[in-house]
Image 1 (cartoon, rainbow, N blue to C red):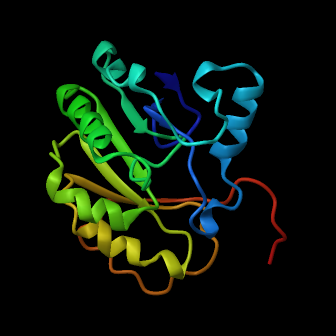
Image 2: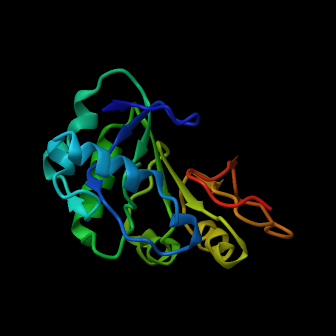
Length: 187
């Protein structure tokens, strides 16, 4: 477990690191920059830099943490990345179910795969599910999330890159709003 400077969580757990860019919200990815820095520092879990890497050896870590925590799952990746095997995702969900004293927050930009897998996954009350929505092109992720039977469904408008227009937020329990990491010309 790593303590987090992210305002809306307490700790992070990264059974997967690395990712690939899929939308405008990925342009200035904080995780990519951090992974490169951690690789340069010789951190073993980042020997592949930001290349997608599964870390079986950390799967059971939350079961060892006895103090209840709010844990951001895969702050350095996306659990629903197309290259992560279904079986590995099932293992992550199994650990979260067994570590019932923690609250787990999962955030994805890959809402289509999330929606496709939702009925195959067990959704205990301690697993919160969210999607990132950075602009109008990503707004469809909200409806994908609404189809997921998570106890808490949340949205991250972070980075919020443009107006989103009218939003219907029924069945959404929590919204995070924030700017973008990195530099971009202002408007």
